[in-house]
Length: 127
Length: 127
Image 1 (cartoon, one colour):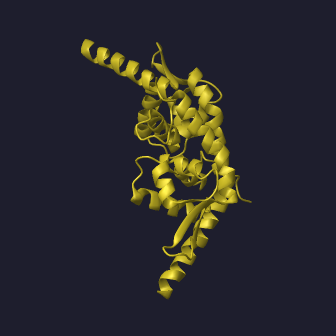
Image 2: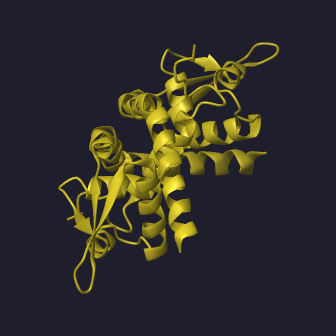
Image 3: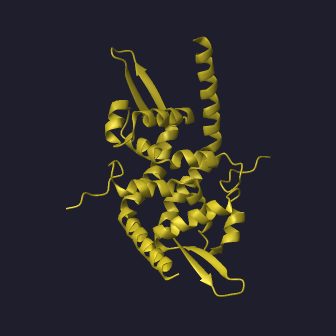
């Protein structure tokens, strides 16, 4: 009998999945696809600062995972659209909760970091 | 007036926060601290495969963010315990949803990857 999946176990595949879904660009791409199929260029302008190379690589990884589908429309020039699969839509809720948490607490965390660094500097100066 | 936080914006601090909370080890440490304060050695045995160096670095980053507190008890040898702050407990729900999603869908994602790679190999062989 197989053991149930356990992310605390060294060999569990869920760890590899964690790495993918925890990735900053994955979070932003999945959330950007929440409202339906969009084109590469739309994703690129929605997600500020992502390079075309990283966007291509991340989309390919998500397609490989079965989270995103890529559809090529036979037009001139060819239109390529990306869309969440059922699995991807299922991932949307937990991933969006992470994004919302990050946005809500970013200012507080940045302030905490500043305080920590000042305290650490003082400790160093004393020793 | 400040703009509201927006993870899609290039300069938004929430992106840096996303990187931290999306990290595999952060997810596992925060979940491991769900039941209250524990010691470094307990964390180390709970989270299989984490090296002492990475555990130390991740705990320090979480302490700096204000997600974890580190308490040293004046015993011989000194006892050091880690605990979630209020901010850390607030992070627990979204982070645990991510872990559970990863565990529930790991097998399916691994299968999707296998299928994708077979199809990609066939395409390459044809061209």
